[in-house]
Image 1 (cartoon, helix red, strand yellow):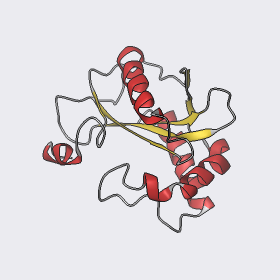
Image 2 (cartoon, rainbow, N blue to C red):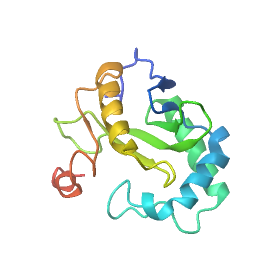
Image 3 (spheres, one colour):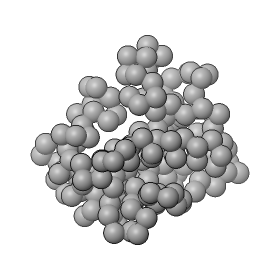
Length: 163
């Protein structure tokens, strides 16, 4: 079964009050690399307690390859990554990722992760992004329920589901 229905067109962008989502693509390489490398300690383990991305020695070329992979996943409809941009387009805030569930778990259709640069992660922005993205996923996507491991479900609970 495909991650999303064949007739569904995933949004390429979406504007919220405090941020905008745009498809994560190679043209964001310089901004993304700067945000990732300056915030590495703060965003490490966003994909799980044993995940060590980003590596301390992450190169620009490796980061660019990641962005190329994310763009390919979007085109192939196997995963959807977005850059989080300030509403005025001047600041790169972080990234949002939507992926299929890796295990047979009827409670969720997808899993989502996001990180913010240390410069953007203030004044409750992470909480607002979580709330806004959850509402957007319910209204604009064909998912019944999306898990935000490490945010709306603890890593221990997530692991117990078979992840």
